[in-house]
Each structure stands twice: as structure tokens, then as C-alpha cells.
Length: 431
RNA sequence: UCCUCGGUAGCUCAAUCGGCAGAGCGUGUGGCUGUUAACCACAGUGUUGCAGGUUCAAGUCCUGCCCGGGGAGCCA
Image (cartoon, rainbow, N blue to C red; front, side):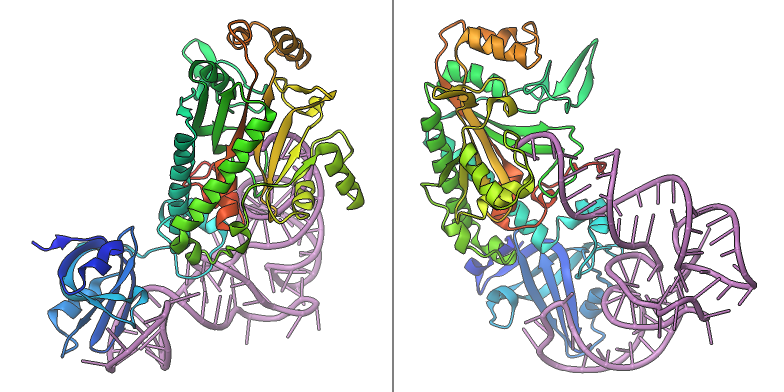
């Protein structure tokens, strides 16, 4: 029995004979030399065999192979400058596990309409594989950050009795004899958790039944939401700043090889270090007016507005103090002008849009109840939430970060749908 | 929901003014002792999204429908 080794570890086995289990990534032949590029999920290695005659049994077996056929192969590892990755395996023998049918994805450009229904196969491709490896790294860095900052992971439910932000964009489902909704945010539960644990975060999928059809939107996406008791606006914006610096710097450090595959220019990302510039909503509007934006003041920004603002800075930029009427009911009014809120969004550079939205929360019972009613919610549905303002209420703050938008930005991909293994987009539920 | 572009071979696309539907890639066969999305030679491949209309003649023009891309709105 030869030792089963993964491609990423091959450089430690030069001179040894090993076993590789994988799939045929590409085949090449040249008279009496045959090459199999073998993919095993951790990398791709070139394997080679020679024969003095062109009809040796091994060559006959080789000639049965097709792209993506599954193969177990044994051979000696050697350094080889001519091979991609500079390590090569000289094949001693191989077993065919299954001969692949003609593989639909070619090594050339395909349209998105062709690739999306083949997403289950597309993720084998080099670039898609690299993006999803970076997603894994990013998720670990997110968890690492909160661990280091002393936040406790407290999971929030996906099936909920009512909306968190009360839009009409909820997925409704049957819950025995009741109605339930898929969560849009863990925020309200986070607030309860923060009163129990101090500093908490949740991290899971969220669902928005919005008929959005842009490169920044998914129907199902993952959100990281920290919430901390006794944290004011300034404290929480500081968390957001450290958080984004940490996950970007750590991900580009650990994910270098994958960012190279994606040909990502790292100069902008290396610059993502605190402090980030801050601009108040009303000042952001002055910029927008100068640039000829048609958005009326007092409204929320459109995607193009976000791009205009972020293009003025070479780092992510915080926009703060949004008008109360365009924001969620639970946001703490600005003591200097109660028509505005202690809120902040973080806009990513290069047109990737809003990646963070956060605020200080209202902790006064009467004010919260008033705002809740103004927004058309019933006291009944939010009874438990209002309880938090009855039993030891304290100032607290939090935010949410969209994982896929952040990953799309870090990887430099054009469309958010490639930042999640199986994207749920408008009208596309398969596979 | 609105605007916009598109649907031709397995894939990516071409087809001039309405006049014989054709390239590359993939696939198959053969060749080549170091290939890098290998290369060279040869070969098969069509209900032009669907339905109707105009015309001697429609991939091309007209009407309706279906599907997809991009964007807007909405939002993270």
C-alpha cells in the first residue's frame, strides 16, 4: 500500500512513491509520452508516463480516459521545472474508478446561462474553486476575529414568527397551523442575546424575497451580525473598522494562491487599514449633487450613488447619520438632530456597494414603542422585544455584514452569484 | 414591475440589401518522446426559441408568446 497524499502536500514527498485519488483535469499526449493532469480538490498535479511502444497496455488504458474521469494513481514524486506547480508524478500504475461521460464544461468561455444550471459541476473549475476556497478562509477569519474580541456566537432562528424589519419581502411558509417567515436578519434576537452574554454575534443565511436583479443581490445570502451591550455608536463603528481590516488583511495573506488564480490586483486591498474615512449622510449628498445624481435628498442612495461616493476614497468609507425616516425603527436618534440616526453604512471600494449597515439601538421603552407604532408594527408581535427595554435596558449597538458582497469585493469578481456555492437568484432555484 | 440586449451545431459565435446555414472549440479516427487551454491531418454534427403573417423566396421583415443576459426600482 502506497501512502495516500493530497496534491497540496506533494512537495513534502519528493523521491517517494505515493497514491493520489482524484479526477482527470486535462489530458495530453505526444507519441510515446502521455500526461494526465489530476485534480483532487486541493490542487492539480501533472502526471506523466512513457512507453517505448505506442500500444502498451498502460497507453491503451490512458486512451480510455476522458475529462473528469475518476482515477486512483500511484507514482514517484519528482521535482520538474517544466510541470505546472514544479512537481510531477511519474506514473507507475493507475486504476480507473469511473470513465466520465463527455464533460459539458470546456476550457473556454461559456455563457452564464449555460453555466448556472451546471453549477454542481462548475464549482470544479479553477476560478470557481478558488473563489469558494477564499470563502472558506474568509469565514474562518470572521469567526477568529470575534473570538479574539471576546464575542460569543449565539445562533438566531431561521424560522421566525414575524419580520425583523417589516418589509413585504419575506418568504412565508407553513408552520403547522401557523405562518412562519424565513429570517431576514438575526438582529432582534441578537439584542436579547447581548443582554444575556454582553458581546455576541450570529452568522447564518438570511432570506429576502426582493425582486432585485443586479450584480449585488442574492435571494439567500449570509450575514455576520455582532451586537454588544453598553457599546455606543462610536464603539461599534470601531469594531466594524477593526473587523473589516482584519478579515481583508488575513484573507489576502492566507489566500494568496487563490487570489493569484483570480488575477486579483492586491494593491487596493492591501490599503484597507483603519482608520477608514467617514462622511455624514448630508455631506455625502453634497458630493452627489455636485456629481449630478438625481436622487432627492432624504432618500436612500441608489447603487450608482454608492459608487460615486466610494470612488472619492481609496479605502472603504463610512456614511453616517442617515435620516430616521429611511432607516429601521429601532435606530437611536442623533441627540444633535432627532430627524437623523446614529447609524452607519460601510461602502466597499470599486463599486461593490454597501457591505455593512449598523447603528446604535433605541433603549428607551417609550421611544421604541412610539417608533414601532409609527412604522406600522403591532405591539403584540414585538412584546418579547419590548421586554428587553423593561428588564435592565442598556444602550447597545450592532451591525450586519453581507458575506457575499465582501467576498465579491475581495476576490474582484463581477457578480455576487459566484461568491456562494449555490446561488439563489431571482427565478433561479436550480440546482 | 419597468427599460434594454439577445435566443442559429454539444459550446462560443458568424451569415452583407430578404437569395445555397458555416467557422472555431469540443467529440471521433490517425500521427508525433516533454506537453502546458499542446500541436498536425481527416471526419460527423441543424425543427435558426415557439406560433402565426408578408413574400417567388425569411435566420434576416411584421405580430403575439416563451426563455435568458444586462440594468433600474427595491435592498445588504
